[in-house]
Image (cartoon, rainbow, N blue to C red; front, side, top):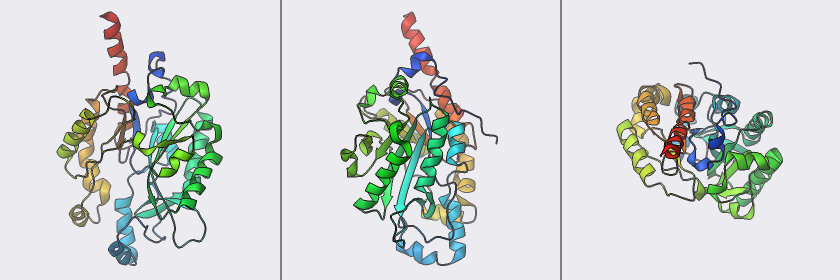
Length: 316
């Protein structure tokens, strides 16, 4: 389906919403955001078991792996244009390379992290009111020097756009615009405490249902939302189904999209439509293949429910 353009949706929000904490707004995100391209010709990544690495010496195995490793169709630029503002990032070095280069990874290696970050930065330079949340939550084959390399890369690419870590409740769009900040980086490795612009990973909890059953997924999303702390963190609702080994075996040639995503996305989207943002409501919602339904549009639209709540309070 055609992807709707929401490239400046944050800048178009009503005035009363830009003064609300970003953690109270509904923000569309993508799961394994970088996985629109993976390299079948590269070695299998260090995030995979030894048995998979052995099997992957057969070229057919890598072709099948690709069907299950790819969770998005849109590039970073296209995701940003569609309204996605939260990116789920997993990165790795290539142990067989002498250089410190870092790549995105999901079973197979994706593009260089540098290339992805510069693509995001170009969009932000052209869209001054838009803000992204970059969640570096899985690291593979990375020593301390790799982390230093990656953090320096973030500084080099984004510079003054990087938001200094603060109390989550203080971060509103108005505050970010005044400071000219556009990038919040969440880093799930202990180096975060050494840099003012790195947010601790625990400020971005993303509970994972780890199920193939859409009903169990929705129950899990409801439960974890109910447990959401009133203060202190953002919150990710991972509206995704995760294939088990038997799922992959049964749908080997079909891949993730055709086996799990297509038939369950409508029910997941219905759950999204019934949500409300706010301190105890949804914040960030992630999905696979964000363009298959009006995902970003639906999540963005939830923010206007906050206007109704405010009007009711003003009238009472």
